[in-house]
Image (cartoon, rainbow, N blue to C red):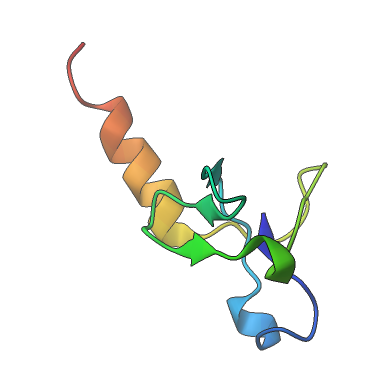
Length: 65
């Protein structure tokens, strides 16, 4: 997921690995809440990944169990 073009500046249009919320919005590991009306689904490995999401997922992979 990332913000649609024109919603935010290009430097903020990074790709987040986000989970859907019951209200239709999305929540990313970096704690960003993305409104569904302002986002686009990225189907391929395109765009710059969110470094905070990447770091959070890497740290979670180090946790036991």
